[in-house]
Amino acid sequence: MRYSTIPLAQTIILHCKAKGVQNIVISPGSRNAPLTIGFSENPFFKCFSIVDERCAAFFSLGIAQYLQEPVALVCTSGSALLNYYPAVAEAFYSNIPLIVISADRPSYKIDIGDGQTIRQDDVFHRHIGFSVNLKQDVSHAVEKVKKYAPYLITENTVENTQEKIQSFNDTSLNEAINLAYTHNTPVHINVPFEEPLYDFIDEGTVQPNIVFNQEKDLSSSLDLEHLTSIWKTAKRKLVLVGVSHPNSIDQEVLDILANDPSVIVFTETTSNLHHPNFFPSIDTLVAPIEKLDQKDDLFRKLQPEILLTFGGLIVSKKIKAFLRQYKAEQHWHVDEIKAYDTFFSLSHHIKLDPNRFLKLILSDVYRENTKGNYRDYWQNIKENFRSKRLEYIHRIPFSDLLAFYYIGSSVPRDYQLHLANSSTIRYAQLFNWHPSIKMFCNRGASGIDGSTSTAIGASVYSKKPTLLITGDLSFFYDSNAFWNGHVRSDFRILLINNGGGGIFRILPGKEDTPNFETYFETVQNLDAKHICNLYGFEHTEVSGSKDLEDALKFFYEQSDKPKLLEIRTPRLLNDKILLGYFDFLSSDFINH
Image 1 (cartoon, rainbow, N blue to C red):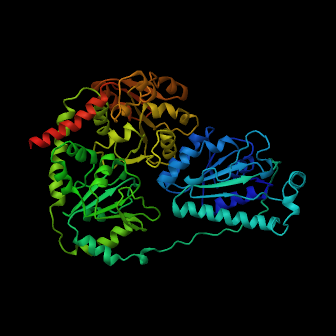
Image 2: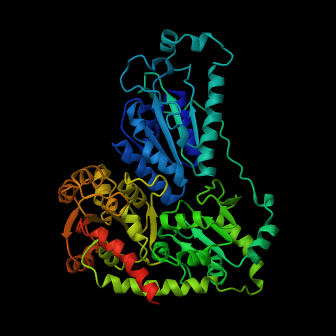
């Protein structure tokens, strides 16, 4: 095992080890060599080498998302660091702990015309939980420091001693890494190194000051008696759950909520919460009502007195629009760190783990029977829409909607399922998935970039196979995701190739013009077989219902190579079928 002769490099390695940051994703470079060798030669760490920094960052995000623990990213100086930004923004809004460690030039070599040298300090600015520019050692490369920046040694000597520098760096590293753990947030540690970079020793020379975080109990600051009283007397309580990790809420809590007639629980696909009395497929309920003349009366019946939210960001634009117009009297958001005023009605930010809060507030509320018909009224409407969905499905030709119907019933139990953004996640929201399937999607910044890399990262430690469902633009955009040796043979991809950004045909402002097709829909004629050949995937292509059903029967079987099933759907028909779906449900509602 070797250590860099640079004290700062040793310090970083030892802080990460002491805090249990075991997974290190490294992109090759020279300036980060002291860190690369220090991490990769220490058996405590599990290191991954990924050349493309954008892919590396999303790969790290996938690991951190799956393990629910910080993952470190290590890159060289210059533009390499900027490629981390999309994943850092995603992690910031998804509450995923990434520890970005960027090697840098000394401060006196910035902006003098050297290559791969940019202003790296605080580069993520408003999309980072904590950012620090560590201090360069003055005990390393002393002659160069004296030559280029003698003031670092001769001026303010009391503050610029190696002892003071070590203390500053220890304090900063403790704060950064502890914050990543306690606040589930990305942090950035910028590390200036002077050459030589490749001098190593067999034993470390640094003894860093390691300080561990002390957790605080915030439950005592809540007026639980008051909140419980409000909850108990409210007759219309709407629980809306965004992105949540599987098994984050105890089943006994879910059962209490599900069996309360004064409570409706709206769950998104990414909530990973299931109960027969819950309301998945939110848009299937809300969108048809929007089209009715009596929509105002119906929405006022749905309007909650209390809106209780927890989990990550919400996919459904329909539920956002509804709750912004028909606001709850009180909106409680339960999260230990953040509370977004998504519906412009936030009244309480309850800084507790949702499972703990629900146990506290529900512990004595349900010793007596609650009454009301809030849930039952909407349950009847939900069941009617669900039965009509099948009727519509059996009427339509092959399309995105029909493909998702077949896919939804095909996924094996206990799979880890990753969804790309844009059309993919929105189609998935329209269907019910088996409760054993673990659902994930990058719903922080919600970009199409990085979906594949995230899924591959999450698959590394998964005990079950991983399936990625993606659209063509997202897939081709992130094709460098396969440029590593970490794709398992049981990794599966369902690629919905509709020839472009089909979601733009659904959004307002669609025009059938060359400009629309070029600059919005971005029509493309690519297929995935060449990428599959390059990276050793099995590739199958289908373009009809029967072929898709047949292909899915064998798609999940064990194989020596990962598999991709490319599903071709009609570019000019998908939007009409989807919009017709909500029209169909709405017309039936009128008839009943």
